[in-house]
Length: 87
Length: 100
Image (cartoon, rainbow over all chains, first blue to last red; front, top):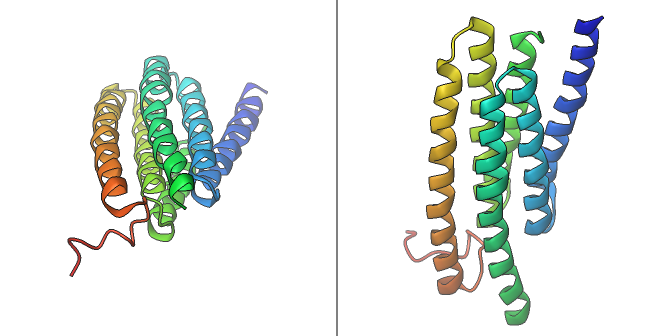
């Protein structure tokens, strides 16, 4: 029973991870890619929690969603905004 | 406990999506995001194997990978901004100064 529930949860979050990852590479705008990357990183953190690696999950959220993603969003806005003016 | 093979399949799928992003897209920022995806796929295998074999070394290694990924993005974004200023865009096919 518990195993079935765990498999169902894994399937749900695995599909979400793959969907967000596809969103990263298929989105037309870089900003949408950055948002999808945030979703993908967050679902990977959920996988870490399911694997009993809570500290790695916390570091994933802190380092990736809090650091890397903010940095990427910063660069996306810095480049896109001026591109529209130039084009 | 979910079998290790399922995590291997998921990680392979995410890694292949990242490789596709690096090969098919021309936006330098999406390059960086795809590299992040691939690093995350590797991390997921490390943590899953660590749980499977009952050791903690996989989790420790994934923490090192995270620190490396953060440093890589910081340097990569510096490069992207310089490319943007020099070539008026982040299209990697436009940056031809060091290309034969």
